[in-house]
Each structure stands twice: as structure tokens, then as C-alpha cells.
Length: 86
Image (cartoon, rainbow, N blue to C red; front, side, top):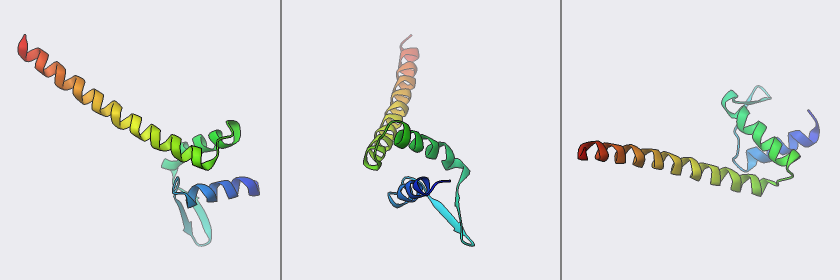
């Protein structure tokens, strides 16, 4: 892996976007974070989005996910009331 990518991954860790575990001088990224890491790499290298932009995108995507869950819950509640009326 190039020094530039290692530096980028370290920057992601410093900003709190990913967590890196160090065991016996070896650094590891949890398997569950690999998908996020790949997404951040694409944002940075392919779309030329800086770290601040990546942080903003992450925050906005989290908000969208919360809102989607709320919409699903409200739809389910609405269906429940609609079934009670009929």
C-alpha cells in the first residue's frame, strides 16, 4: 500500500471516521469497517472529496437512514390505524 493511502487511512482514523486496532505493532481495521473504508477511498480518490466532505457525507447519510427508519415506523403505524378503521 502506498504511503499516500496509509496517510489517508491515518487521517480517517484521526477524524474518527474509522477505528484502527494496533496489536503487536501491527495495525488492523475491523472487517465490519471495510465497506465504509472502501466507500471513503472512492470518495477521496475517484470523486476528489476531501476529509471534511467525507465527514459531511457520512453525517448526512446517517441522518437519511434515521429518517428512513422513522418513515417506515410511521407507515406501519398508519397501516395499523387504517386497518382499525376498516
